[in-house]
Image (cartoon, rainbow, N blue to C red; front, top):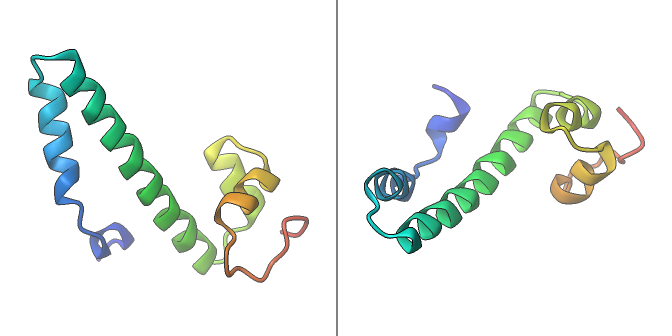
Length: 86
């Protein structure tokens, strides 16, 4: 089972459908906003999974194209390794 299989996102499918079939620019904007929110939820889950597998903050930061400090500040709640370390 994939780490992502542990999460269910039925609203994600609704937002994608709304985006694909929107007749109104406001519907498109709502769908985009929803998708951005889902993106954050999925990113947080992926970062936790990466840390559980021993992947360093620097490697995660590189994958997200952010600084190590920004990633650590955003996602490190409960993680015991400091931002200056691996």
